[in-house]
Length: 506
Image (cartoon, rainbow, N blue to C red; front, top):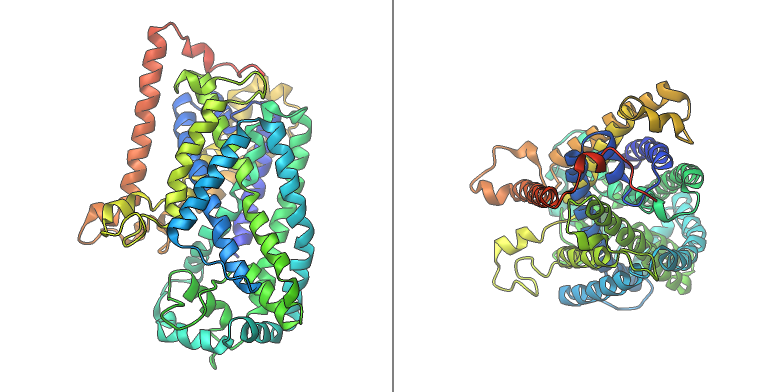
């Protein structure tokens, strides 16, 4: 349900991006659109938090590559457990490597992405075969779990019940969905990446709408299929009342509700790729589980090139408008890429590396003394970046809604406006309301970074509400940067009234 609700909102948002990007195909994507249609400052602030979200996610995914390698490798019989410091080091190396590749421009990043895409794309067919085989015969997962992990599904269910699974969550069905949306939405967020480099894509006004829409439908369908097949294949060792199964127990023990180690179980966490591997082992295909390592690691790494391109183009567009340091709009003549903006993105991405690796968690490799403030500062996880993305996409949907009325001249010349004004307004309204719902889930989900439903906060408001205060601090910081460079620009004769009434040149 989380993938379905998130997917519906994403599809409407995708159409919004397709319409507006075709009308204004410029590097910087959403920043250019929002600042020209709504308001320069609104465009800046929403794009500023989007930049932070993408840059942090860039670093987080660099670490996730090594997390996946450890987990999928264990299923394939390759013991490669990584410490938090090792994952930080690996993520750091990937950030440096992909920042350097990103500095070489869209063409080079595109070649790399094509190579990285087709390998796991082909293997996806095999993974879907395994998952649907498990869905059709759940005993395959049971056999594979005993063979690979040395435990039965019942061991996981009993361990989770002993650690309080049955009393851990008292919310409603849709409260549970709001928790699921935290992960489901994060899986979707790269869908708009190509629109941020529209100024560097040949005939973007013709190719992007079709590509975005078709890809959006395929992605939602694949996520739904994987989710349902994984769920069905792990509905084993069900408790007598029918309430709990391996699906719930394995997830509870893997993702913060309980603890696999305390239960004396294998430390291999619940990923859909792991379930596919267990199914393969149950089918006698354990020797092919090495393919799942390649599949999982490459799919994770696929997110990295689009993210470095997207975040750097946001900085570039802001700098081009003279509301960021002018050096960030410097373009290398040979590679036609904003090298300084790309390097800056890589530097900010290191926060995501520290966050996902956990080196600053209490007792972590870089925080052995247990400093709570350090842990809070580097706790910029999925729940935080979800909200920042949600803010940006909500404002973007509002820009589409007002597009025909506030930029009529551009609208009249727009190459793709399906159904005319009425249809565009409907798409904008649905996308706007849908994104508002997701924003609400990110803010109030009891398992999210913010959990505003728990207000008033308990003993220490600053610590308990750190994600909220930190977000406010970042928005204020962005506003100060905007104000400083706008004031500086005026003293040097920059005409901001002209800048924000025109689309940047191609």
